[in-house]
Length: 70
Image 1 (cartoon, rainbow, N blue to C red):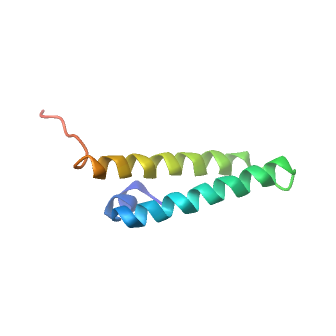
Image 2 (cartoon, one colour):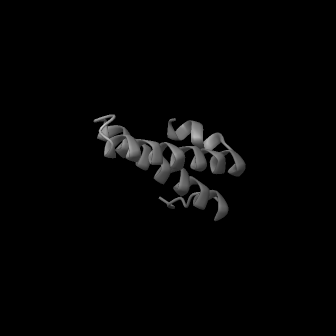
């Protein structure tokens, strides 16, 4: 998902996405460990998506993103 789509979601939707991404990371780790897949890049992408979602959750909980006064 793109960041624009994630920003439109509410907190509950984002929290559901966190659970989905965590499950995906576990599945990918197991598949890589058991040599079922060699797609380490997918694991990296899933981790980055999880970090993006968690960042958005913290921004929304702290009254939105901070903007510079330029």
